[in-house]
Length: 71
Image (cartoon, rainbow, N blue to C red; front, side, top):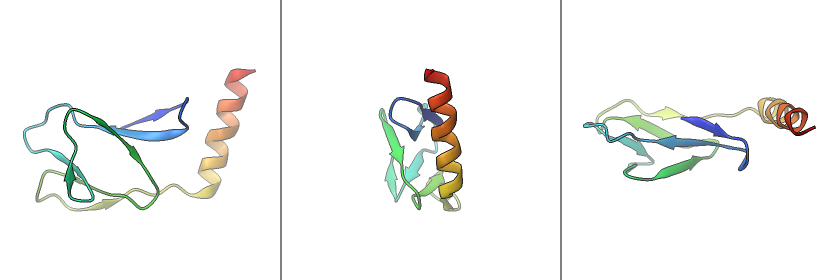
């Protein structure tokens, strides 16, 4: 998972793992998925679901940091 400064969002990629990475029960393969607040992520088909959360304050801090970089 990485933060994309240009798109201002988190991106999830699976690097061809044997067990797979899933977002809302859809396997992530050969692509990147933009994560949204509340997305359910699982590592492996039977993995425990993890809810992706970004608090509003964190979003504002990330945005402010990005704006400082571009100055």
